[in-house]
Amino acid sequence: MSETAASATAGSSREAEIISALGTRSVVLVGMMGAGKSTIGRRLAARLQLPFVDADTEIESAHRMPIPDIFATYGEPYFRDGEARVIARLLDGGSGVIATGGGAVMRDETRDRIRRQAVSVWLKADADVIMRRVKRRADRPLLKTADPAGTVSRLIGEREPFYQQADLTISSRDVPHDKIVDECVDALHGWLCGGTDETISPDPLDATG
Image 1: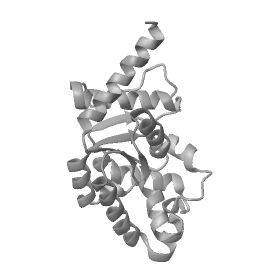
Image 2: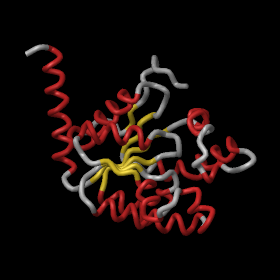
Image 3: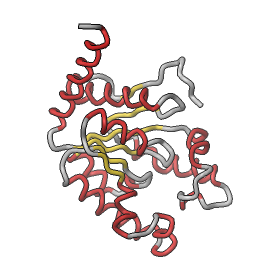
């Protein structure tokens, strides 16, 4: 067997072990807007051969309107109520990879459900990385302020104590997406099958943005 084939077989075996260890649980990605939850989530789901669901997309489908319009029409508390119901439904739907909205973990009931029914992964991104990624997008209602950078810093301060409760932490930075996915797979395998450290630190040679 060639070295490439052996590596692929080893990878497939590790991913199969993760799926087996998950059982009916999901992998839930948490973190700030712009951390890459949807992008990494899709790729991670493909690697694990699990369905991928974006909670924000599900909310938009249920309301038949984009999230900024939900905020503008009904307000944030209404949105958060619907978000909690959607995440509960997704967690009850069997194993998969779920990307959550940045504020989802602020709800006690949502954190408790994730703790019971999933393995949580915090994609941790610095404020400057987040701003570079979101500044050209118009679908971030919480950033429609006079000082978006200040808002991001405030939200990070408010939310990080809750993100830190995640089972695993992966540094989201400006490296190829597949590298972040590899680190997620390594961390999940260690957590579920081996018992390695719960935080994957970036290689010092990586770009940090």
